[in-house]
Amino acid sequence: MGAQSLAIKNPKLTTMNDPRERLRYKMHIAHHLTELGHLTNRLVLEGELLTPDRTRALREQMKTLPEFVHKFTIPFSERQSERFQAFIERAQHTFPKPVYLWTQYTNECGALRLSSIRDLNFGFDFKVESNGILSLIAEDLTNRMLLDFYEDGQNQLLDIELAGTEWGKLAY
Figure (cartoon, rainbow, N blue to C red):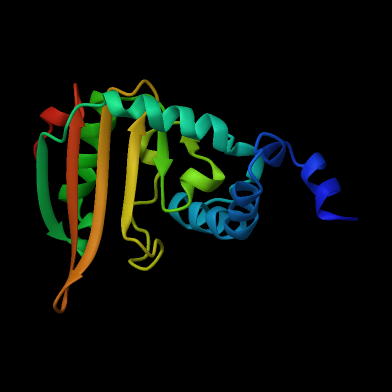
């Protein structure tokens, strides 16, 4: 079975006309699904992802999202605290709708739709995403939460940037 027959059987690949796009997809999809599994504490299947074409269209629409209006930094370990969990509950309460999870390979492999912000496992390992950046973007493009985790000397830190009609008003 050649690569061409594989591409025909995989609906995600049939929407990609550029051979370089197909190659990037094939190179990263297994890692992307594993990473999403760690971030959601469940098995994520390829069919759950938006197609790369739909993801690109969504990314274009995201240009209309408001700029970040609120930013704070916490120790990475604090995301397991009661205070942080209460913050996530407030975010969920103010916007109890689906979000898209955006990671390093989302552009090549497709975005994952989560039914709510609580579907993200905020207890994820520091090394789960090699770039250290995750985004939660409201399905209706009204809110965005960027999680930027990094090391500063010996400290692991988490910057949280909030934007939007609901999340942009949240305080930690």
